[in-house]
Image (tube, rainbow, N blue to C red):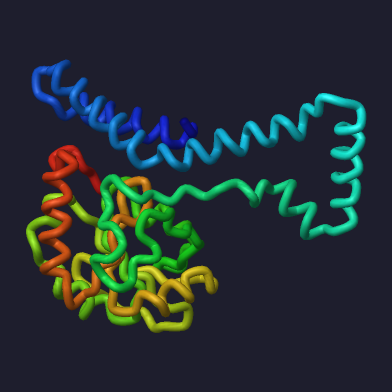
Length: 251
């Protein structure tokens, strides 16, 4: 289990404990079990891939014969002649990235554009209206977020009126294009892109709202025109997974 994931789970349990009346241990254990079940369901394939990679790396880093060790040593020396290849290995860019196929997410096929669903959303620097440069992570907070990459956040979020978003305590965030002028939208945190990290995503998801989970993985990409249908699907997903909305925060 990755350290950041362990910290996230501990934070959730601490939050659950503080919010349960009379310190009901049985209810807290139920929350603990739910989190472990969905953690295993979502991350099983990725963790299996990491384990297989670790075994392969072990066979490379601990050769069983003189000639195997000689071959490995010289292979690494050859890599040093090609900086891009050396960086690829040194930075472990070959490590498989997590991509969830099940759990709390709307699987591909519900809407045409679902390429982001199940993946970790990029975390570039953005600019606030006060001129501060901060990570998008800090803007999103620790709860659910509805993110729009748009120059017209007031029009996009005007359709987000369904009760489910308030039950989830969703934080509404709009990222303006890099050269767009500042605008104000009631109830929406507006920031502006600092680089080109989100440009391709914005082009592919024009007219979409991106639902981000508290761990900042993409749960759904919902067309603004279908936000009512999307809210029903998220509501059903909440009931299916048993997530307790009363314990969700957007700090």
